[in-house]
Length: 210
Image 1 (cartoon, rainbow, N blue to C red):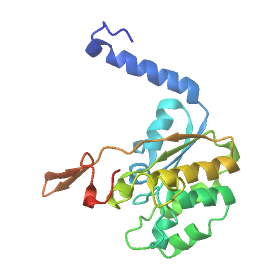
Image 2: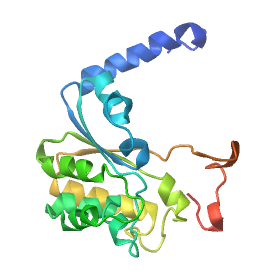
Image 3: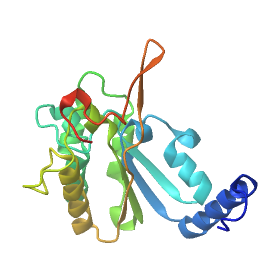
Image 4: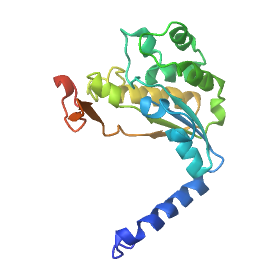
């Protein structure tokens, strides 16, 4: 950009230019979107997957699962089946036993759409997928998960360990996949109509540095 140009006069053209570039690069690509409720709780054109598809011409698959984490949840079998690191095992192996059991007997609070998103995921030929996006963070933060274990870089109870594990499992099985990691979104919690907490506060429940 020409930094001498008033950005207010140029911003629309700049955005349209960048969208046009993305459209050219991603048109007809197949993109699998995995993540939490920011991805999974919306369908069609109002979902992030739908927006990406509309802007780029790519074919997108919304396989987000609300309430789920990047990290392992060993004491919560139903939810753990849809943690990213567990899904990575299933993508690599083709074994969906844990997920099938979870939707057959869902834990309290599990959204109804999990079964349809799981069906989409199971139907994919991952050797034909061009790009995988991974976007988690809010539920790991709320669950008090630490970012990284310096003594074990594949510790799946830590965010970075679970992410490393997931990427390596999937790319070992499907080296064709390009992985895009979406950083955790800024989040705001309200109480009685007022802002209660934001994710700028670094020690939620004094147990996490995410």
